[in-house]
Length: 322
Ligand SMILES: NC(=O)C1=CN([C@@H]2O[C@H](COP(=O)(O)OP(=O)(O)OC[C@H]3O[C@@H](n4cnc5c(N)ncnc54)[C@H](OP(=O)(O)O)[C@@H]3O)[C@@H](O)[C@H]2O)C=CC1
Ligand SMILES: [Mg+2]
Image (cartoon, rainbow, N blue to C red; front, side):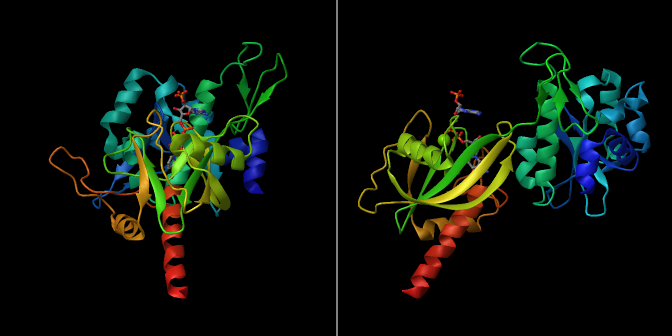
């Protein structure tokens, strides 16, 4: 309720900013602190902190922060990108005073899987909102500048009256099973050895089920028989996707895989033993070029991991009941 109030009411949002926490980004790379155990933490800076006073000659600039969320104690959480408007010397200040800033700016692709599960969605959401504002400064109908509300939950073109809201692209992600094995694929851009559930963007006007059947037919030439919903997740790559995760089955007598080599480098069936082994790997062993040397699956925060885990659990249950 409180979150909705500060999202909608400019005055309430300005007041919340006075005592809120701010997460900093530089050209969309979040400010993170690497701990001794190798994971990244998200340092929250208080609005009134000295370091934020460095945000350019205009100290009011911090008011351009975007509301991301609020804690259970009703502390508002904001994101701010120091790379867009602040002057070069201020950015250098941030880069050089990593102690004072309590972290460094890190490319989210490099850090995402090394964030704690509770912080990863917050970092992703902060980045997604900043990106949306950075790329929606003009009305696509009139070409006139759009104005944001205080929280950053929308932008309005006063010339056409159009209100723009942050967007996500729907993606369906599916773990296909033939009853005994599951189908995993890899794109050439994936880290070496990593296989994941198959995914694809929904076309406009398509239902999720239609997108799922089409993607599986296109990418591996299989016909899906049944679909079961599992869960969903916001995903920051390549931009802002809304991942809908499902399990699907195919006829065990029609399992020939015909890989679309434009989309995928490889796709094949994996046994429960292979999958179980991969699920135990936290950090895959690497060769002298730093490349993983074994078959592994996306880490636990990715919804693909959850699908694979659920499938393995179901196989165990089935073998126990038999
Ligand atoms: N959270 C998780 O566990 C996982 C998440 N994913 C995510 O799922 C997403 C979709 O999977 P992927 O197999 O790549 O999808 P697709 O199979 O749909 O193929 C991607 C291609 O679709 C085209 N495309 C269509 N609509 C869009 C859009 N709105 N945004 C971007 N590209 C679009 C692009 O083609 P072109 O470039 O030719 O225009 C793009 O290269 C990926 O971004 C990936 O990060 C994937 C696996 C696991
Ligand atoms: Mg795909």
